[in-house]
Length: 397
Image (cartoon, rainbow, N blue to C red; front, top):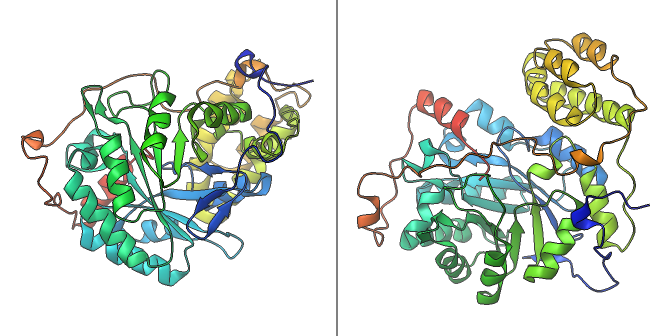
């Protein structure tokens, strides 16, 4: 029996040969699925967990070029990998072509197999400084940054990720697609919301189809992939070459197994029951502790506990306790209160596990829209104190 929400109960499995591997330069990604870079989420522990459930491409959280070049300890840790991570993919954030180029060259020397660039971050602190979603407003600046990254990446493919635009009155995704193709990017990913929307409402899949119709390079669709069958629906509706999975996998790393199954034409396995999820949660906690150390790893784990247990009846009080956990013993004690035989609730399939439903007026630098042909990079960050504050504010876009 198929376990899916009403939106997906009638979706047919992939037929043999219906979809092709995602081609990103020399990489052939099957299934054509990419883990979205998400700040505070797609560190090595989570990427390694997702990778064990299915093949695909797993991108790091956004790494700031200036902080990386300054040798910022935490930035270097988040950009790091392990020998089992192949292909290794890192997302770069930068607004200065020189910084971006130097970082791309350094990562290639380290053996990175794929680079992505973030031009979709909607966080006010970022856009107010002329970065993130503000950069595609100025196509010539975008072109300079992409050109520098592509040149220094050499044979390593570079992709970019954008949003539709600032708001419905200022859409930038078609210009961004043109720039990406002209400057040698291997593919472009489109989060089909504006920066003003943040994560609210429904993603505009029609925009993904429009971008695909204009370009010869691969286009990846991002937005509202909550279940494996959503990926099939998106690709059939838009003709895109692959999907980017973000919030749908939070607390559900097995979603990548389900995606691999439906793209191979097989019914996906049932989601794990609560006992199975507790085992995954503990595994995830151990990986975070090994990577960050016990104190920071368990601080990370607080939000993950809420995401893993969301939707299960009677779990609210346990989630409340887990939001304050400090030791592994705290974690095991609270998890022991849950009923391991509780089945995964159908209502939790499309439950939003992060990011609110609010909208915003996008903050831009003063007079920013008066000079859209300007290709001058915004001011770089130079002090370690500014870097600390900046990186705390970043988003995966």
